[in-house]
Image 1: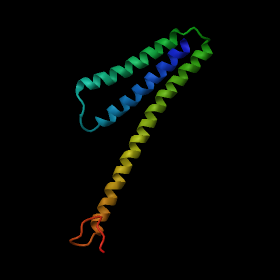
Image 2: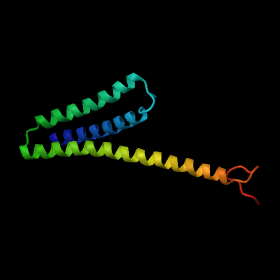
Image 3: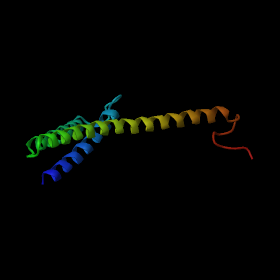
Image 4: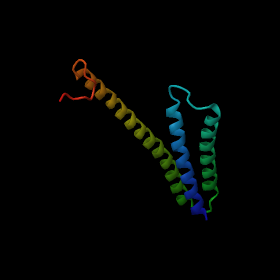
Length: 120
């Protein structure tokens, strides 16, 4: 039962970490979400971390195994934030590449010709 609890806690923390990462990045330059949604996101992350930590602390397993689970849990959270950042950065880089390619296409179009059209 304790193992199932830890797996559920890890999944809960993982999804909360991705949601928090997305929320922070989306609201970095402008506040697009309502303040209450921010409370839900930050609260969900805090509850996920708190309950998982409480469950880990209360498990009746050997200290080395408990330490392994704790380090694994923190590594999971760190990796989730890193992965979310990497995916978001890649997406933004792809958008920037598409903008630059569009500008080049417009600059190289002949006068009176729309970008993307080819002369027959």
